Image (cartoon, rainbow, N blue to C red; front, side, top):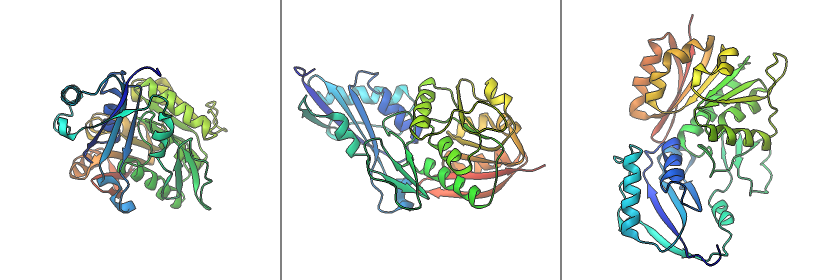
Length: 321
């Protein structure tokens, strides 16, 4: 590798991309040809601006930079992932720079992900050695892996709604994190409630990363016994997974996904909830929130509160009987 020509290509993308969309594009735009990639949401002016700030993506590639070819490739990737309406790259919009092959690229990437707080959580990468401030729960997430470091308005909204449930004195029997991504929300739920959590995702890579994050955050692996606690994980088709079905119903369901799957899974999700149980629905742009909420109201759920973070809304709803 030391004899190869290396370069970085950097683009800024709009705030409207969700965690899932931005992470997918960063991970897959070059089809695995990148040596590494990083994905960072720009530092907001204040915590309330978090959901409105733009993404910065950077890839480390081997070869000689060709801005025209790179722009064409990225636009083709956007079309392939149905993001062409949100991502349009021009050669002039790319920043290309040669890189010394002896540079510690991981160290440079880590510097772009400084620790930050959301509610009572202190979220940091493995590179951070500073202890959490007094009164905060330390939650270690490596931003370059899977989906969700906590910075995006959707994930932050879910964290704050989990804290709201804790403050209200809710004591769940079991918690389901459906579409867990990096595992941040399931891990946070376990930290808050010390009750069994099942984390599920259709992508096996997300489960691998969730298991890793559970281990480094000292979350026990749940043995599925009613008197124990921890987190169990599974990959596959959502509510049809045996692990998910065997431990229903759930006091709290977390679904930080996108509006279309939230609507498609509504019947299965509500069926998996305890009577009087709660669901956190997220990954929803502000203008989409009423449609999602109305669909769940039609299934006998009642709105409890909303958390708006920039362009994004997270819904907290409760099942009526």
